[in-house]
Image (tube, rainbow, N blue to C red; front, side, top):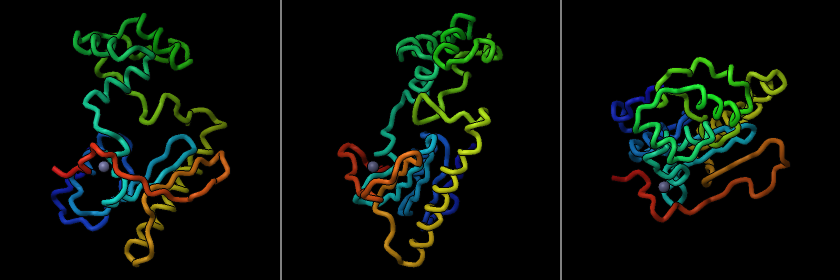
Amino acid sequence: VPVPRLEDVDPWDTLVCAVDTVEARWSIQRRAGGATIISLAVHDLLYSVLRVVPSGRCLLCKHPYDPELAMTQRAARWGVPLETVREWTAAGRMVVAEMIDLLARTQAKPASAFGELLGVPFTETPRLPECGSKSLRADVPSQAPVLPLATTAVAAIGAAEVVKHSSGLAPLDNWLTHDLPRNPSGPWSNSRRPHDECDHGVR
Ligand SMILES: [Zn+2]
């Protein structure tokens, strides 16, 4: 999904960030200017809302910049060390059957599930979905119906933050997570110090 050209509609007052990749979040943080960012994210049945404020964490604190992110995500997906991915990438390797066996074992699926990757340049293979090695299986009938539980919840909280922001009610400070399978435990929201090395996207 192409990242919108934020500079074309400057200045923004409020940005709701609901993108799917870490790179897109970096881009939004770096180009948001003085806008308030309300970032929504879902991982399995855990949802989180981050309202970026100067005294709290930003999207670059949440996802520290990693120039090797694509390789890191492929290493996790294929179950190989980062060094191996660096070698495959530098050598321009095509995917062979032995590599598919590794992938299949890591993903606990039959090798035939990845047959279409045979002969594809390794650097063009899909990466791990962000945030971890385990993702919700939307193709499993028993799991597909639960996905909206998290996405609906995070959208409702995001909408509430927009209303609070525009009506002057006390907004979220600065971070909220709720893992739906667990009982909510306090505090409901958390202000977290920015990371010392983070420039908050200010260049
Ligand atoms: Zn930051």
